[in-house]
Length: 218
Figure (tube, rainbow, N blue to C red):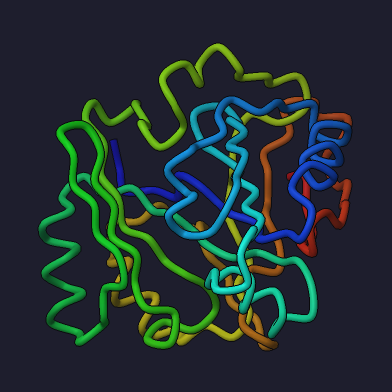
């Protein structure tokens, strides 16, 4: 499986309201609410889109990094992008060579994650992850496949990122990432748009703003 964008994250002041809008527009559903994000001062909801994922996080403490981000951003927005790598050791070594700081790291038998310091990347939090088997995704809970709904959308085609250090993003992600996963624009740092592949081809071209992110059906 090639290196690829596997999960995107919205930071929102109201998780439930944001999730409901996503369900109404995209026909997807929540597959998992991870109790582990409490350690970050968050509640979340993870929604599968095919075998990729859209997560909504909401801070429940004022000390949460996501709370500070929402305050700086003056509202909800695209907060994180998680990329899956076949060779995570090589990706981590590349990050070290570039002098990019790691703010969180967690390794398990079937899943590994590495959050990079947003000040070193610009744009958003970038996470470099690995899964075994490659089609699995433990961050999405034990039974996420049962919650896949693809009547409207069946995959995440790419993201649009504002305020990124473009050279750094390209260096960190490397040449093995699927083409078109990221486009870069000027503006305050955040992920400004998600491009979702429309399984309902009659809805191609639709645009909806949810959680401060423009959702484009392509």
